[in-house]
Length: 111
Image (cartoon, rainbow, N blue to C red; front, side, top):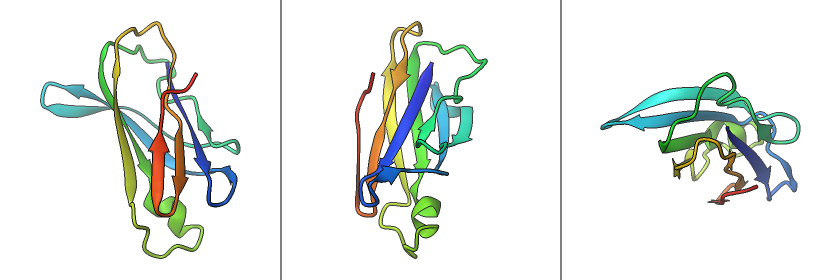
């Protein structure tokens, strides 16, 4: 299972309504796995729902431009954040939170 959680530290709130895409690397290309929008708690837990997760390299792409524009920032500095990570044991839960502000972001492996 691969999940994420986005917190907007400039607003001091969960990042609600942020679009996220999950992809897996297949040879030299990326293949879509899941897509969704964060809920009222800034969480997205359905990216791999009903799909097996295999060992490999995955990436999450967070659409920061639309999120920040909807909050009044006309030209966001970071239009997106892309986090690439490895899944070694598909039986584990991979939780990849992101902390954002209009001019920065940080990711980590959560629990």
